[in-house]
Length: 369
Image (cartoon, rainbow, N blue to C red):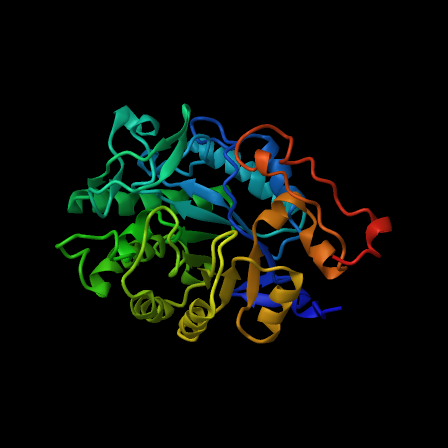
């Protein structure tokens, strides 16, 4: 039986104390009100999972223009703040820690979801070959407009609004979402970013928006309470890069100078295969980050413990296992069986598949996971 004790060693994340290294990944659940206000049952959902070393919330759009799917939460109005505040208070009351993920989807949206039927915005005016979920079901994403410099200034201001709202709601910190094919990655990846101005072309120009957002958010939160998420090898939502190792190697070296709380690295998408070359690339990219390093993608209890023990990661985020197992740290620690997730209830719906997964029955702890 693999020794999983490395996952259950106390660790400091900046000035925040984490009791374990089993973290909850951001998980879109599509259960908010249409205006982005979190629903009451989200208090139960998050507080059930408060034993995570740290909860990273589902992504919350920082503006009405940042929305890409129905029933995702926002973080830019008072009703959003009030809804999230109850969630944070519930998590804290149950001994947990929680960061909010700040999100703008960019071109992964549909005009029917945006104010006055506007076109989405992006680094480019080319539509993504991707689908999004609207009130009519799955539909192809709408053709975007390339952000003007005035639009970029507005977007940066939106991230500040979100950062201030997260602080008012009582979160322990924020994560800037620059992964998974959404707006910031649309600027980072040269397979999408076709700009010829100061935000396109050279890697330093493509990193510029991320840097400016981190500067602005850093006026609200100290650096050691700000994390960032990247996915260098990701192709989700129709993104790609001509040389991810070189370009993201540069990005990571530059971001490392900021003293951020952590780098949250998506190593592989759910269900995706990773070959030896990709693994080697990720190992070399990891070496460029000197701070707290969180990994995500395809880990189980044994492989996560190995990653921490070998120094590849300081902590590991688990996604779908946390959906079905609110007490995941306990189950991993005891090598106990895991509940199976119901994929039909991952996105949207009611309490079913959201807050009704059973906690561990002590009588089952003798069965190895």
